[in-house]
Length: 88
Image (cartoon, rainbow, N blue to C red; front, side):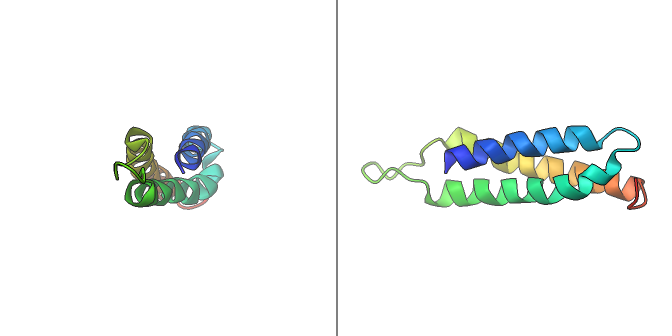
């Protein structure tokens, strides 16, 4: 589960960074759902990815980073889509 959080975090950072410059804002239409999925996978990872012996969350820092990054990049990408009028 932590590997999926890490991969989605990386994809959402790259997609949002590519969508910020002018004339590439359309990429944010892909970056926002990826970032939202990243946040959801991070939350699910925090809730379910537990060690069976100690009942502690495995790789809690990775899941928490995925939640925080996903929420921030979702807001940033949505703001960029609104500033571009939904087009650019």
